[in-house]
Image 1 (cartoon, rainbow, N blue to C red):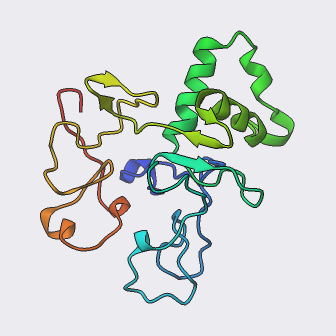
Image 2: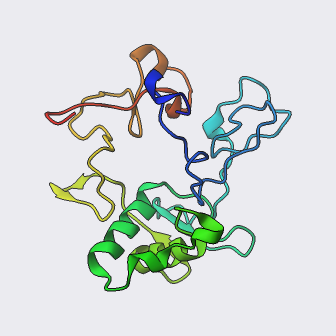
Length: 190
């Protein structure tokens, strides 16, 4: 991520101004620039995934959910959620898509206030955003299905997957954050 595309990189959520990223500041701590906020004086051996994210969960029994807070709004949730919301609104809404943009303040990005409305229209339940992972569920696409998110759909990774990332067996035995491993590319259309 973040490398020049000719060197295998792709734009990061920071590069694309993703409004729900809530990336940690670059202070030299583990996880700087990630969605995990480790203390600035954390040991270099601190597992990044052990540090908190800026979000309020919906309780232990609901995994794919964030709750609204006055301090941070909804906080962090994965980019496939607003991607699905924009796709849903585009396919179902009769409003003019051009009205989603404010070129004077946001250029070619959909402003966060508009994105909040689109996401809530697709996934809002009370004061929460509830979503499914971007996978096939019982052979059918989930509400956020994104064909390019390979979350070990067919057991391609064994025990080595960390979300859509495939780690080597050696790395998978360590307590590492999966985003350091490459994306899983499996299946006939990979």
